[in-house]
Image (cartoon, rainbow, N blue to C red; front, side, top):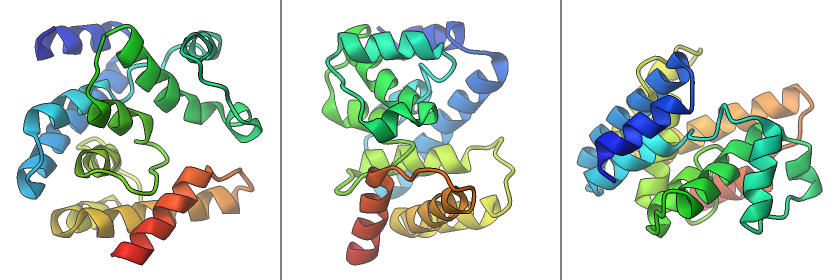
Amino acid sequence: MTFKDYKKLVKSRMGEKRFTHSENVSKEAVKLAKLYGADEEKAELAGILHDITKETPNEEQLQIMEKNGIILTKLQLSSPKLWHSMSGAAYIQSELSITDEDIINAVRYHTSGRAGMSTLEKIIFVADFTSEERDYDGVEIMRKKSRKSLEEAMQFGLSYTISDLIKRERVVDPNAIACYNDIILTF
């Protein structure tokens, strides 16, 4: 498949707002790839694909994961907002025959992060936070940090997310905590 084919498929699987977000993440990922010396084509593709199952009904996401041997933990079962990164990674592997582990992992960990992320994984994580249509409090700080250091931007983003989850008394994905600790220890 060409990039245009992937883009057309993504568009067919989501509403206009989510598709605009996916396009913007893809564009931002290319900018970050140029800045940090990563593969721009991989960044563009991972960016457009990152939310491919975001608007897929929960039952269908569970079927995708089950079909691909993903067994959810109690924490994951209680957090359907995390599912699209897991089902999305499984979907692009099984249905789109994408075999590039870096692209698969960039989709898989774009919401939580994880310890030991590749540059591409960090780029998609940050691009998702900083895409053009984002307008949350602190987005301009995040954008500035993203031009200075992926790790600095990730630390800011993870701090924001983890603090928000704790304030709202929600579970925190252990991958996010591991990612935060990894960034703090290596940054």
